[in-house]
Image (cartoon, rainbow, N blue to C red):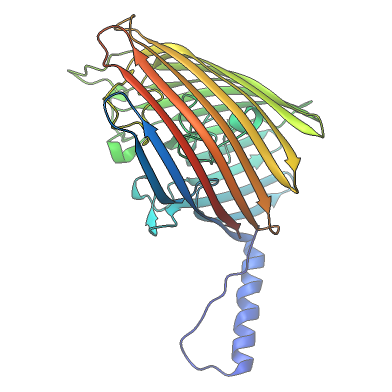
Amino acid sequence: MGTRTKVTVMHRLRPPVIACSAFAAVSCAAAADVTVYGVVDLGAACIVRESLDASTTHTFEETSGFSSGSRFGFKAHEDLAPGYQVSVRLENGFAADAGTLNQGGRLFGREALVSLSTPFGTLSAGRAGVLTSGSGSLEVFASRTDALPGGWSGIFNIGNFAHQSMRVDNLLHYSTAAANGLALHLQYAFGNDVLAGDDDGLPNERSRSRYAGAAITYDNGPVSLALVFDSTLYKHKKGDASGASDGRVVSFGGSWNLSAFKLFAAGQIVRHQRAAYNGEALFRDRRGGVMDDADGFNAHLGVSFRAAAGDVQLAAYHGRLKQNKDAAAKTRHWNLVAAYTHPLSKQTALYAGVAWKSVVMDGGSAKELNNRTTQMAAGLRHRF
């Protein structure tokens, strides 16, 4: 939703001058088709953690971006000719509880894109979420298959799928125009993370991590489907002990809107997955168990419906991985989520939710890992 930008000038001006200046500013903004938008999401969370090697802990904390990441952005577009349009999106992410930038301190870490739309499709370039990320305007998988796409941080959603919330730099994206509900989407990132040294100008491609993906989507009335193949092309350097195999993922699923409720189902087949399940902050310091080269699957079932003038989401996630270097080392996870959002207006909503997550690693030479976390959260979200 767009908003007019209010500018305060620290000088005394006569009323006619103020009126003319305000009119000129609004007129210029309208001519440029610029939209200023954002989300401020702030809540409180209670977290109970249990693990094998530590006593149970209880944490109560203020949390930013729980149901939807806090952000501030600009959108602009210009019509070049009938059917042809150029557009720009710049979107930053910030922590509302501290006022600091997210995404590694980037000014526009959530998205920085320029796009050219034609009757033959849309070509975009810049930084954005990948096809299966659940984040941003180029994502195609979670928005069609997940009861809680993106947002809902902590153990509510993040970490259940490969490439979830993954954003990349140096991205090139192409989507065809939809034909009978079908569309094709292609992505390639020349260097995933410039802050980590993935410079797209380096002559040796294997010296940086890259990303490639392709997807087919189908949208027809109450039915939405998605099939995605994507791969992280890991950087390979001399002495790299993490292995040379690239990560490969096949993701599939869809949703069916039955008016009274909406059903969701999704699955993933993963190969050579790295840092699975326990990579999120809630598990990062637990026993040090990491699956750095593993095969397996992820699955999801969910439903959303209206209740008490608000929206309810119920979701279940399950996944299993087996480490390639040590076949006896296996990891499995369960995640159960219930969330409720109650709108106070078109822009403002209250939300609350509870989630339970279990991550277990055992067998082989890997360290044992058995974490159970319960998280309860409530907060206020305002969009402008």
